[in-house]
Structure formats: structure tokens, C-alpha cells
Length: 363
Ligand code: KG4
Ligand code: ZN
Image 1: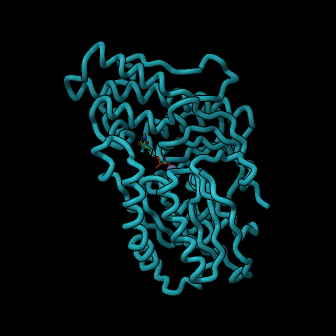
Image 2: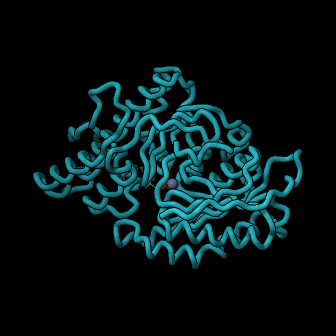
Image 3: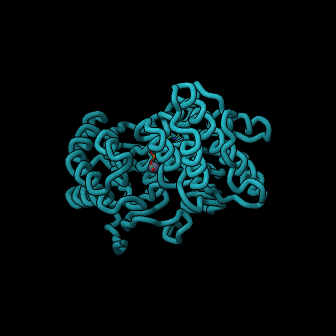
């Protein structure tokens, strides 16, 4: 479902001396988040998670997500404003909302509130692609990170809905080199966690359990590694391999067996992600690799990509842990960059839009 693109009037920037200051709202999935961001600097960031709401279902229930965004969004915005010490919204340059991709009912909550704020203040309303937000996440955080400019790089985007290798050539200039043919990697973590009954979301639990296990205990498949030109991913076969293993051997009967299964599954995922990232980096000749999205919090993935970086001679950046999962600070940073580049409108709600869509290119 796509709504027509809207534009808002063009006011003059508050001051050319300082980076754009924006209020951002994120509500694309199961986190209601708000942030005040100045350029790449985060003045306040608040995230209200719905994990407990969806945990008993083993996955996100879209209708429940929309309902909880509705009740959380205003308190989250108020808490963010209080944290930033901002009393007058007219001290901002723009309102930024995640407008795609995501659950449409969930997205619409943030977008409608954003529209209301923009109408009440006369500020421009900018829409940001959720994955463009993730691309900005490694630039946020401590002093060192936030002073880093947005530079060209290869990004490995790994979240609950996406698994992609993207050549980031500039703001809005993205080349998708490879994507998943079936499940996203975070989805695979969540489904495997459900299979072994360790709870939702599965990524953090499997990551923790895997630390106690042997990654070589079970030889799970590494999909599509043989063809060296192929930069696509597939994780549904791996999920089936875990299911078949459980059918043949029964559920793990001890914590040690469970840890071995988690470590072996995680090693299969990480091997494929890192091998394909190395190939993609060599292909585009990038000197930097950024790993972003919820799965970038994974400790084995971080360790393996850092080891590959030393071997191949490239630089790695990952987000601070608090900016790996969904948050509005990353949306604000992307929105502030778009504002600085002259963008003053363009909200287009959609469930699914690739990063290399023509609408991403700066006007
Ligand atoms: O980016 P994100 O917060 O939401 C989406 O945009 O989808 O990613 C959520 C995903 C979930 O599937 C969760 O299981 C996974 O990120 N995740 C992890 C870890 N922490 C979160 N996966 C592996 N290891 C982790 N430590
Ligand atoms: Zn996300």
C-alpha cells in the first residue's frame, strides 16, 4: 500500500552555522521511539519496546503493534523532549518520520503524529527509509563516532526484515549487491529460537547460549557459498536443517546440548555473512565495512568481521549496542543529513521499498 508523496512548504534553515536539529519518530515495527538529533549528535533518544507484548506469540502481531504504538507515541515524545530540555518545538528545523518499509498500520501512527507536529509548528516533515536510518547508526554514539562524517562504504544490513549487502556511495545513492532470497537473518534467529523454545526475540538469547557451546558440534549447511560471484543469501534451508536435526535427535536434553545447537547454528550464519561481505568488499574496492541492523549486536558476527578486517586490510564500524536495534536517533541522523542536503518534504508510506528505489535519490 503506497500513499502519494506529499511536500511541505520550504522555510529558511534556522541557522547555517549549526547542523540541522530535528525531532524523529520511529514506529515501523515493534519499537516506539523518538529522538532529538543535531546532525550526527544525539541530544535525547527514547525507545519503548513492545517485546513483552509479542513474546507469547513468538513473533510480531501487526494489529497489536499498531495499538501499542498509539498508546506509547505521545508519552515517548514527551519523555524525549524532557530529556533534551526542549520546550519550544520551533527551536527545531524539521520533523522526521520513518515512512517505509514496515508494518503499514505501525508506520502510520508515527507518520500521522509527525504530520500533526509539522502542521502545528509549520516545520517541514521529512520521511526516512528505515534501512537508511540503520546505515547512519554507526555514526552515532560517543564523541569519536559522532564526529565521523558520512563516508562511502560497504554496508552489511542484517535485521529482522532484511539481509543485504549494499554499496553506500553517498546519501540516497545505494547499490544493492545481494539480498536474501527467503528469510532475513534476524528472522532465522527468531524462528530457530522458537523451534528450541528459548523465547522471543531469538537473536540475543541464541547469542548468549552460543557462548557456552561448541560451534563445530553440528555441521549445519552454509548456503550458496560455492559460487564465488553470488552475493545473495538464503537462510530458510538452515532453519529447516535445524528442524530436521531436532526431529532426528529430539529437543536438546541439557543446557550443554542446547548451547551446542545454538553455537552451531550461529556459526553457520556468521560464516556465510562474513564470506559474502568479504567478496562484496573486494568487488567494490571499499576500504570500510559497516555492519548495521539488529543482528549487528551479535558478538560472534562482530568478532568474525573484525578478524576478517585484519586479514583483508579493511576498517570495520559497528553501531554502539544501544543503536543496533530500532531507534529514532538513526532516523533523525538520516533526516538531518537529508535536510542539510536541501530536502524539505516527501513522505510516502509503504510496506516495502528497496534502498535503490529511484525515490531514494536526492532531488
Ligand atoms: O533492526 P531490528 O531491531 O528490527 C528490524 O528492523 O527488523 O532487528 C531485530 C532483529 C531480531 O530478529 C533479533 O532477533 C535480532 O535483530 N537480534 C540479534 C541480536 N540482537 C538482536 N540477532 C543475533 N544476535 C543478537 N545479539
Ligand atoms: Zn530495523
